[in-house]
Image (cartoon, one colour):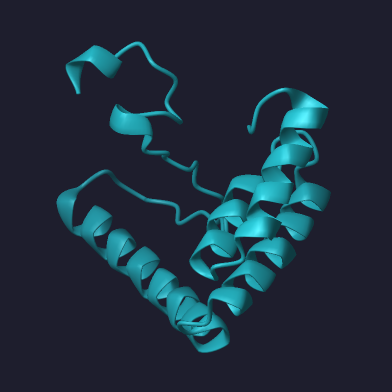
Length: 122
């Protein structure tokens, strides 16, 4: 919405939250030349790698909300070790997961704790 153009990236129209992405895999596919066919082939290689990662993740998590949270916590821990200054937290993901699981008190407790310690949920 146009009136939200100067709002923080995390908050959009009607309070809808947008979550930043988290790096799951990184790599480099060098290009010898900058031509269409080479870029197309490199793109196909990346897509093949990502499909494999996605398939593995779906096998681990499936449609299980709790397993998804466990995966996020594991990913967060490993990212925090590798990039200690770049990953803040996964409290928003936890709040939404507990809401989806209808564990409203747990979700509310996370919010209260974040507000008490930080003044906001960030």
